[in-house]
Amino acid sequence: MIVDPVPSFRRIASEVWKPLTALFVWDCAVTITYYLLPFKAPSLPLTIFGSALALFLGFRSNSAYQRWWEGRTLWGAMINASRSLSRATRNFLPDPDARDLKREIVKRQIAYVNALRCQLRRRPIGEDVTRFLLEEDKGKALARTNPANGLLDSTGRRIDIARQKGWIDTIQQAQMEAVLVDIANAQGGMERLKNTPLPVQYRYLPTIFTHVFCVALPIGLVESLGFATPLGSTVAGLMFMAVLRIGDDLTDPFANTVHDNPLTAMCRTIEIDLLQSIGDPAPEPLAPVNGVLW
Image (cartoon, rainbow, N blue to C red; front, side, top):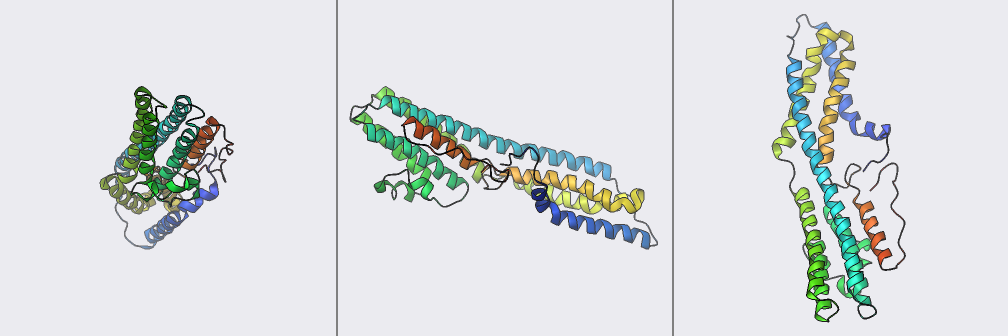
């Protein structure tokens, strides 16, 4: 997620220079052709086309932002549920009998959120997950089709072990299970966003309409703008293409790009809070890198 108050001009230029250059070349070609040919092309009703396209792109961008914000809301719920699980584990399980199990459940939750982050970003699960697990557990839950869900299931089994040993009662077990349900619901919502893209009409048609409009734009403006057509048409086309790109960037909030939710930073927040809750040293919060918080 870009956190700089003013985005880097270099980053913006790297994303738009190719279509912007192509648009400018086309605008120049249309302008030159207009003055060289003996006949003139009829004017186009660009106002009507542009208004309809602006409404379409605006609606699409709002839908994409809703997906991005829902992803952030679900991760906020995950942070809160992780803190609640850690607090319940620390307060319910007695010392010194259940000290090892208490620490294991808390560390497994840290491994769980990092495994979920890797799944959503389509990244391999590495040391940031396995270092929080016992050696005998590294090949079990992580071998499942959904490793994060495997870790959550095994956390539930450890809570049941605590109940069987008399360390917690059934009421306390139900309270901790309710937190696991909240965690599972948040994960399900994230997987829904990741695995269900915008409908093809939202992805394909706006791209086609925007490119057609940008191609027709200099033809409709050259009669009134003259030699200023390349500049005016390029600037107007850039605005439509920028809105189109905004929708593309926000559609997947877990795409591992500079525009997605800062999953790594939120996982670090959970790691800090949970390690401190059991008295272990915690790392520093993640800082932005070149204006981007990952």
